[in-house]
Image (cartoon, rainbow, N blue to C red; front, side):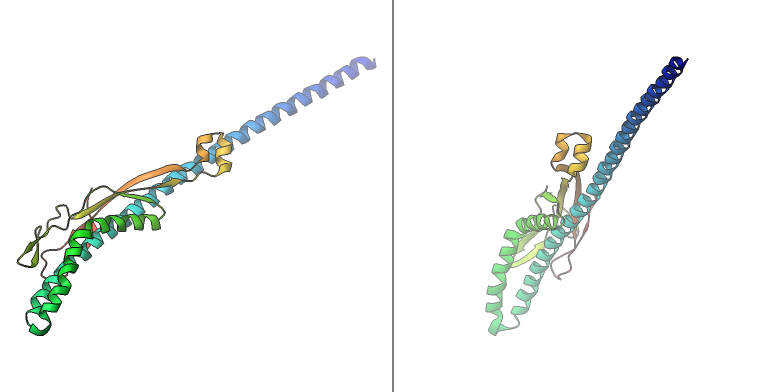
Length: 215
C-alpha cells in the first residue's frame, strides 16, 4: 500500500526539481539577453555622443583656423596703415617702415602653417584628432610696398577645412559582456567635417572676421 504512494511522491519531487532547473535556465537566458541589450544601448549612445563631440571639435577647429587667417589679414591691413602714416612723420617714418615690413613678410610666410597648427591645437583641447584637408591662402599681393586683397569679398582658397575624430571608449565590463576582444581597445569614433571661411574686403582697414562656410 505505501509503495505506490512513495513512488508517486518521488515522482512529484523529481518533476518539481526539473521545473526549478528549467526556470533557472530560462532566467539566466533572459538576464543575458537583457544585459546584451543594455550593452548595445550603451554603445549606441556612446557613438551618438562621439559624433556630437567630433562635430563640435571640427567646428571649433575650423573657426579658430579661419580666425587666425582673419587676424593675419588684419595685420597686413595695419601694415598698410602704418606705412601710409609713416610718411607724415619723417623723423620716425623710416624706422616704422623698417619694423613693419619684416612682420608682414613673416605673416605671409607662416600664416598657412600657423592656421593648421591652430586647428590641430583646438582639436587637441577638445580631445579629438583634427586633420586639415586644404591649404589655405591669404589671397593678397604686393603692390608698391603695400599689400592688396586679390579676392575682394570672394572666398577663393581663403578658408580652413578640417576633419575631426575621437576614440570611442568601451568599458571592459561591456566588452567582456559581449565577449568581443576587439571592443577591449579604443575604437575610432565618428568622423566629422567643417569649414571656416574669412569675410572681408580690402586691406585698407583691419575688418576681417571668420564664419562657418558650407561644405
